[in-house]
Image 1 (tube, rainbow, N blue to C red):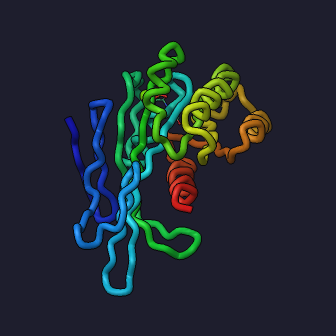
Image 2: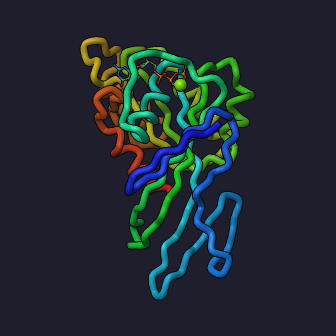
Image 3: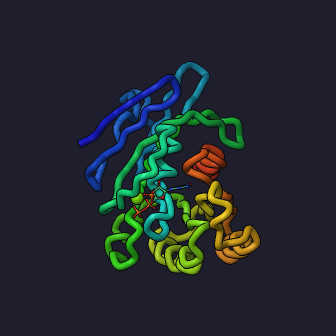
Length: 221
Ligand SMILES: Nc1nc2c(ncn2[C@@H]2O[C@H](COP(=O)(O)OP(=O)(O)OP(=O)(O)O)[C@@H](O)[C@H]2O)c(=O)[nH]1
Ligand SMILES: [Mg+2]
């Protein structure tokens, strides 16, 4: 069951089923140059070439750290205080146009996989990780245990997908009075895992767009 909504820039699709075949891939038989495991098409119009790419990314981390909320904020600019644990995984599609470091224009479909945060379903997680080309490791700055656990999430993810672009997110930065994790501890965890880190808030939007856009650029290198 999928709902779709679009504006000038983006088409977003949220799917209730764990498996969602990405739609919206422009295919022109004459100009379809190649097709890999994901789907790369190159559309040639005169001398202008625009690449269509589809990339899968995952948000992982303990329950209630804010994975679903970060995706909702980025894709729909919405936030809800209510907590509804994610069952299985949900896929949300966001389409953006970006320019990579070589100046190539890219029409990028990001398939954002929101994965349940309950550690006991480790085998289920690993199924969902397959094929991911990037990931966000999410912790809740108000809960120290979520930082202690992030290395475990990191290992499980990288065992399946190998070395891919990752970013550590210290979420709920708006709740400063309740923080149990310092910015230095966040920095150190990111250093240990060899990835950048940001403090984010799905509630007020702090750094949300920025981290997804940075990830998009890294995916298109
Ligand atoms: N104040 C504040 N609350 C947040 C933020 N992000 C999420 N929340 C709240 O934290 C709770 C959990 O958020 P979710 O996005 O459902 O967490 P999740 O990581 O998807 O949880 P699981 O699906 O169980 O893995 C909800 O009540 C959200 O409203 C934030 O940045 N600031
Ligand atoms: Mg969730």
